[in-house]
Image 1 (cartoon, rainbow, N blue to C red):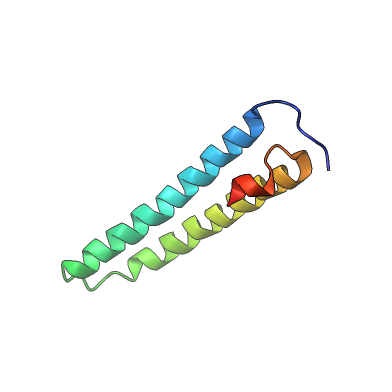
Image 2 (spheres, rainbow, N blue to C red):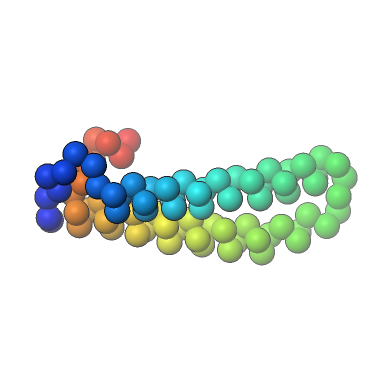
Length: 81
């Protein structure tokens, strides 16, 4: 593992922002689906594909972020909890 000696890592910050954005999209879509259910909309299954797509994007972003952390060492395991 390569150690990072810099106080901040711009790549880690960029990847973390992407990860955060992807998670926000998942939450937004699920919130919209829940609002549709509460309003009595019976076509909420239309959200399923969109949720699958955003979850895949979140999983990819999470994988890339975690791999960077492991490869670059710019965060300790303690920081990730």
